[in-house]
Image (tube, rainbow over all chains, first blue to last red; front, top):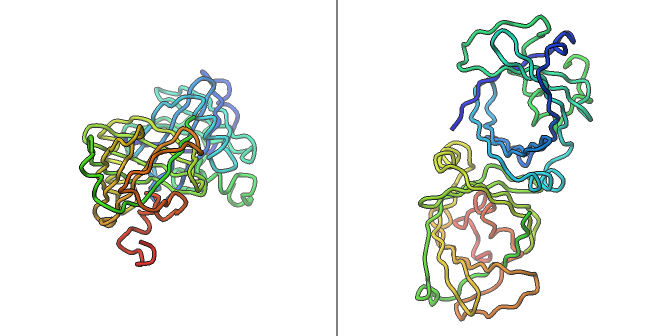
Length: 160
Length: 160
């Protein structure tokens, strides 16, 4: 069992780009989304993972992740996962003792950039970088699984 | 990638019970069922597996199976999988060079017994044991994933 505590934010400037330590391009898709959970297939350059996450809203969720063969993952993405696939580049930025993950989306979700921080407990404090925008942890439309059914390209101006 | 060719049959007598080589009790559940695939968690006495199967009807399906920690599997069954869980005992029977798997269901599916044979190709021949009944390979209601939403206890007499 793993319980994941993540907070998600928008970005208000490009200042983070100067502090990137490394970046990885991901291709991912979803095998299922039911009331209680989502099942994700994710491929990076060299690795593939199957990830199961409880669908409860908010910042604390059950999560399981398993390494699977790269060929299996590409086949599932090509043949079984729902469309569109999620394609994005993840950039890591260290700031004041915390690690931020900044996802720059492509394809149907191009234009969307979000920053996530993983915390040890729901009330853990952290220093906000100058480039950090509004928190969207509790907005389901920013969940990657929701970006399949309703990608950023169809969001209204009020939702952005 | 693995492509699975299975044929499924009803049972017309108990004669198979005399030929059982070994038996395992399974507890399993489904994390998701969408158009294209199902994701199953299965636990036996000592092992746990995550299984992904394409949802196409018929006898040939894409299938992937991965070993996962037993504790993770029990937690997913308890907290994430749809109700009811599928509980059954699988019995293995060797017959004329082929291995049959005979599933005896419990709980909401008590009364249902089906025999499956796995083949190398769709047209592979095999000898029918005397206890073998009608083929149901193409009847979706016998899929384990379908037995969650519509268990054997609610089937009409005409469906049995």
